Image (cartoon, rainbow, N blue to C red; front, side):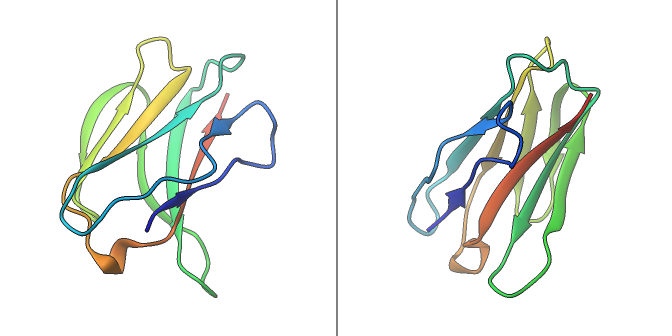
Length: 101
């Protein structure tokens, strides 16, 4: 089970939750239509732990090592998507996006 939650800043929007089963890829999206992000960051947080950085990018698509997948940032830098290719139970966490403008 994967959860993506909205940031404290109302300008960054994510779906309240997303689900998949082990081994079935999932796309978690983030949009911020009023912000041209200089950098896009994705974090994940396990229960009772600090958030950990999963990936960061300026634009384009780049591979993500752990969990395996890719981060894609739109050309206009106003949205991004984190694709988890083969999620495992151990990847179940809260996934956050954050941007720096």
